Image (cartoon, rainbow, N blue to C red; front, side, top):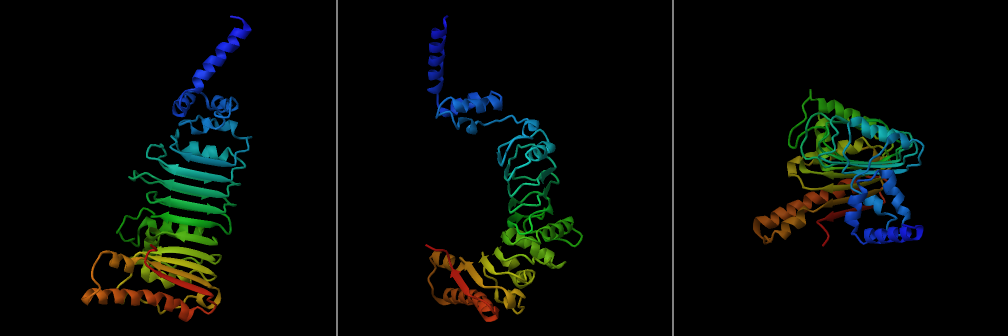
Length: 344
C-alpha cells in the first residue's frame, strides 16, 4: 500500500469513528491512557472537549507536580486508598478550587485530608447513605476563602487552618443521630468544640437546621466560642433550636446582617426573647426573617373558623414577636423584613 492509499484508508477509518455517538466514543477513550485521550482533542472541533466526559481517568500524581492545575472536580471517583486523594491534592501546588463529591463506592475508609497552601475554594458533598465506621475530614488550607461542607455522616471535622475571613456553608452532624441528644461525656461534644473554634475567624456563615440542633445541645453544656469576625449570618432554625437564638447571636458581637429561617414556630412557653445580644447595640443593620408555617396551614384547606382561626392568629402573633424583638432592641437597624409564608 503506497503512501497516498494509506492516507485515504486512515481518513475513511477516522470518518467511520467520528460517525459513532459521543457516548460510545467516550467509552472507547476510557480504555486509553488519559494522556492519549487528551491528545484526541486536537483532531477536530467535535473532539475538542470529548475527553472531559470520559467516565474513567488514570491519574499519575508525579506528573501533576509541575503542572498548572487550578481546578479539580472529583465525582464518581474510586481511589486506591485514603492517601490517594491526599497525594493528588499535594501534587497540585497552585490548586485554587477543589470539589469532592463522595460516592458509596469511592473506597475512602477513614479520612479525607485536604492540605493545600494555595486552595481558595473547597466543597465536600457526601452522598453515602450509610455510615460504616469512624470517618474524619481534616482541612488545612490557610488561604481558603470559601468552604462548603455538606456531610451528615462523617464523625469528625477538624479545621486546622483556613483563611482569616472565609465564607462557609455548614451542614454537618458530628456523628449525632437524628433526635439523639448530645451527652456530657460524648466524643461529639469535643469534636463540636474544636470544629466551632476552627470556624471562629470566618466572616460569612450559612448554617443548616441539622447543625444548629447539634449546637443547641452543645450550648446546654458549654459556651460557644466568639465569632468576632462574623458580619453575615444565614441560619435555619427548627422548633428545638429556636430558644438558642439570643445565645447564638451573643457569640457574634460584630454581626451586620442576619437572615433567619424558621421551619416551625414554637409554643408560647418556649419563647424567651428577653436577652439582648451585644451586636444589637453596636453593629446589626440588616434583618430578614422567614417562616412558611402560616401559609402551610392555610394551604391544607381548613376553614379559618373557630379554633383554627385562633390557632392561625396565635401563630401570627408568635411570628410578630421576632420583628418586634429586633426593632425594639437593635440601635443601628437600617432594614428589617419578615416573610410569613412561601412566595407563590
